[in-house]
Length: 259
Image (cartoon, rainbow, N blue to C red; front, side):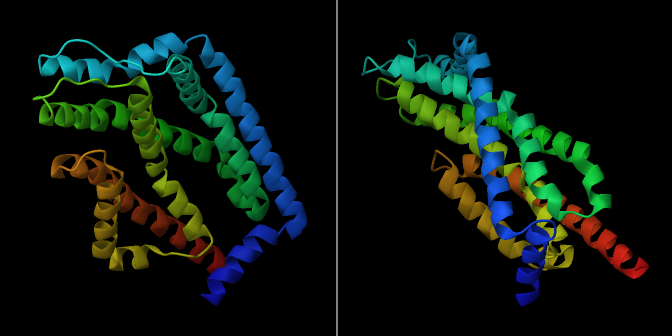
């Protein structure tokens, strides 16, 4: 553990003192927020179209069970808040390349020169995985969850408010987008020598247990099917992460041997 802590400290302070590093973090956070704000402004004009895509899962689920109608609101401010949230979510995805680039600029001073050349693979993988997670949630998890929930309560007349619907939508889409970044997180943890592929493989069964616990917590329904819909990609990403850690560990060993 002491060696791991030393590795983290050396990675963060290799090129700059602690105060300068904190100032760099502050600058990257500010730039990221400004980037999301620009994305929000760009998406504001298309908020109605984005909402049209956003409500398709609930419209499909209602029609599947022979229920008409759509979303309702109980507070006069809810429609305005809805468009704000829709534009913000759209802006987050639009600005994700810029945000992940800021993350790279924050990490880069602690990397070796040969490691800094991976900026494009880093951007392509982070943006691609984030987008893939959002699409998986939109196409698979969210429709299946809504279909189950509405089918379970088909004895009653649904009155789904746009506020609650948007909250659930954002939780699933953004949550899965972040979950899909697992291989990137493992890459940097392996780079800092905090974990190894061997350790991840040795603890595979415990990791699967933790994955199912997390899936049970974040899934919006209580059925096993939707929990498995959350857990399955997480297990696949964990398996991919083992390969990522193995590649990083092997490269580290070769670099050490060459010295």
